[in-house]
Length: 364
Image (cartoon, rainbow, N blue to C red; front, side):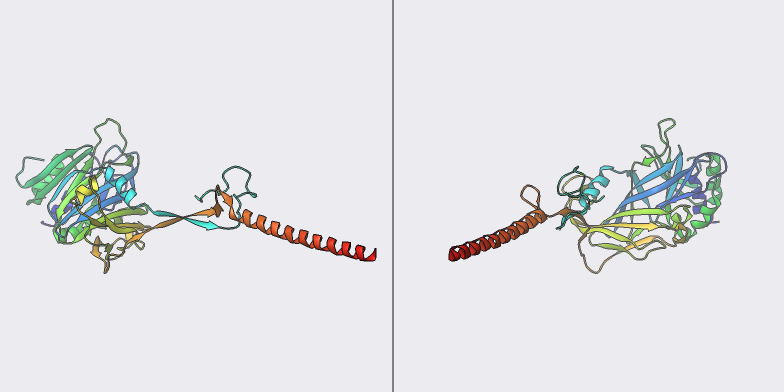
């Protein structure tokens, strides 16, 4: 009976009465399910993870598409969690911190968009390429955070929990119950979230408000296993703030994770400084694709690398080599060569003229 408890918790994923007629869409943190008359897909999941060796904080934001007006998702966590709204400015700040370095790479001879091959538009340098009631069901916390209704639950009696869920109009998707079994075995807890916009008729589309989840953990783990239920390829972006450069212990069924930035950052104010505790922290930015979500077989566990090697992407912009006010070097070089050649011909011509005059003078 105990194993039924976490499975029943997953009933919070359904937001309206009636059986689900659409497949569940998954996100990296858990499983997202729309109401029975809608469709929703997570196009992109971006999360900021802060870990100091004892406490883990995850600030996550979803970019979704579809026509759902209500949906819900669940996130398994290894310990008791607190939840609050995150600061959306954090993601813009991180984008600036990890922005690629841009360098110019010069070439000598003109190309298609350069004069004299261009049509005359543009400059000489060319352009760069493009609950309630039953004591057996404990509500640890329940908050209304913007458009989110967040519930954190415990239960000691599966039958009482089942009664509570049915009374509140929730049903259980069978496949989710099977997929959550590894978390049942590890005795994790769950954060269930309803995305129910207060604005009447509002469709869940684009970037949703971020949520910030905090829990105690002696290891840096990012739940991903429930994403195996997704029907379309998944994309994950992780910003990891820790004492050292971090890396996933394995691919967990996706493509090789790509580090897009690694280095110590010194935020003085703003949401990143607040999350980092006002001190320098090592930031690792990781992107990963999951072309076949069904191959995901574990959660991401991140570990420190052998060395804190910094890395920043470099984006090269090809430019025609110029001097002064944008004068192409090739034009100056060719002009100088032509001038030298003309000078040589002129000197030869003058020498020949002098020789002819000498001959004429001698003949006279």
